[in-house]
Length: 517
Image (cartoon, rainbow, N blue to C red; front, side):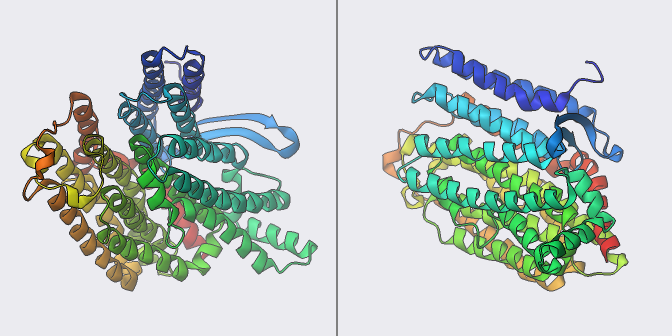
């Protein structure tokens, strides 16, 4: 392949091309639609692997494409990946075709389903590669609209309520971000994330915002804080951080299996990624000033999310609340970076932030696996009530085995992917924010309890006689499970490629706060 190949544009727009092919195919050609959709997604996956092999962490932003677009607004088409985003592009490329494959037997509105899924994939790729807020925001909204329809049309019994709640929460957060960046553009004349980061790093952004606020007779400190909170809440809703999380259990529970896989594995990570790409580098002073509040929100997500999961009787709702808990660990690692500490804590902060970046990828794999396993059993039993299961390992041993490995991955068992990220978060956070880290260990204990209880209720104990005729996982289902387990074991045993990819970018973020202080 030519060195100048625009990898990121091809990766992003191949699913969009596939969506157009699906749209043009006759309604009767359902299998052709599925093949075209899966083919476009797999093509993006193969190109992502090619891009991964060319990624050099020490080189900073790579595979950059920049072209003038809207001169009047100083907007360029600007894309690139660094250690903060390259793993998220890989995660998106891996999970999306597996989520499509989970719906290979779909019979209802096949054309629209796979068309929307490919649009969603383009939006997700764009969020992780775009470096200018103008087209980044288009991709951000493109991740909202298809998911709304996927829940609304193919969801379960309360899908209308869940889809509108998801839409309104996310839209509300998006409006705040849009207004904040409108003011940033008026003050600085740029939407570019890299340029705004450079302005923030040398103090020019703070001075520019202060001058802009004074021209309008606003208090400069209050003005900067309002922009910060408007941006932060938009991402906090997407993560979601407590107390902005209430849309998530409903959306997850009502979404179709593939929708839940993508929602948990990738859409939530868009929020976490926003903190890494936007909030920390552009608003370092405001993050540092409010770090105690932010750490408290992360702690609440960890502990309250775990207790909420423990209280659930619905299989899928339990897994949904576990996402609130697990994203709390990532946010703990991110906010620990901004905590007041001496230069001797630099490596600890870097460890916590590396753990948070790795936790994003790890949770994407384990949550997609758990939601897929919920979908597998729901397709056979048409119930999600944990009390209705029991003893399934006797008739579905393969299912029980894959569910067990996925559960231990989410729990953080050494040797599986979840352990590495959580270990680094706590290893880094303990010296820096000791009290918060100690309190957060309550979440670790409760997480073990609710996941082990889940496994006990589904797979062990006496078999419910009405499930006697259930069949074990098909070859297609086993393939999806095997692909996800590959990443669980690979990262658990050898996480170096992901950590090496992220470390230089992580160190750069930590240095921002050292300079700011």
